[in-house]
Image (cartoon, rainbow, N blue to C red; front, top):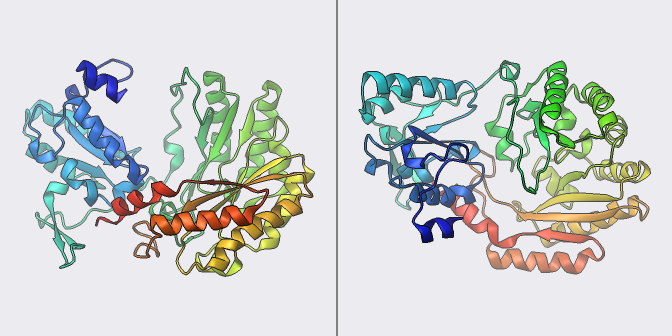
Length: 420
């Protein structure tokens, strides 16, 4: 699409109304991964919006970012008018109220508008702060230019039930990877895995009422026509209402042949009751996340389960009729040795054996990327050459276990995550 827009000299427009990007009052982006940073810049360029915030005038939209990467905003600070830290359900209404009222009363005074937005809890205006750097170029601190606004604290929505999921989401009219509906059942996590940014920035743990989950899911499926719904959270197996919710949903949805799935699941959160319910329609795909191949390294990253729990889960999957299972690992974790890398292959083989030859096991392997606001944020990352060498070792050791990996994507993620 980018190539066609450039070749034909066409501006980037919105999906529903075909409004040019530059004609909006606000452009909001959710930064889920560091590799999307360049997408933001491309989007602004195609839309005719000046890349740098300092170059924008009163006629240009405000560019505001949110999402997990917003907790480390400095890499994109020159390009953003504002950053929302934390949950957006309440804040988005506050932002709209300020933008609309200021445009009516103060015209197009961009500086006054930003000052008003800066008063919203959780709203960070990069132009109102100045980074101070160490001699090596890293950021020592971010100094407020206005003493009245010394710091910005993340916005937290304490009651998830105050905001229902969108009742009429857009349903794609072409094939997509995640071709299903989704309902968030829980936000936050209490496990504290040392590599996981989401486990830290989405605290505290909050749950959605089980009855609300069932009603909202039923309504969503009736309106969208999807054949599968995913119950989303960082660890849905730890959701206190998972068993009654699954049973009630399957009682309602199974007659319509609508399946329920869970995202990547902690090994120690699985139970026969969960799997018995899920398989009533079809055996949706399952990914278990051992993360590391040896118990020593799992202890280092604070992954609190034992290998026997994983092997028991494999036996359970096989006994209940599953024929495929994906295991998620990382390489390059702090203190990792060659023994830990080989341990991935050995553990995957033991999982396949525990399934009695009935499970086709896939090992999905990514490269550890140190994330801000985690205990491992200053840890090193493997070079591309080291990553490829470990992939070669894994392929040699895995045998019949299939390997999924993406070595080249990790390095630019680290560079973007580290520019603080």
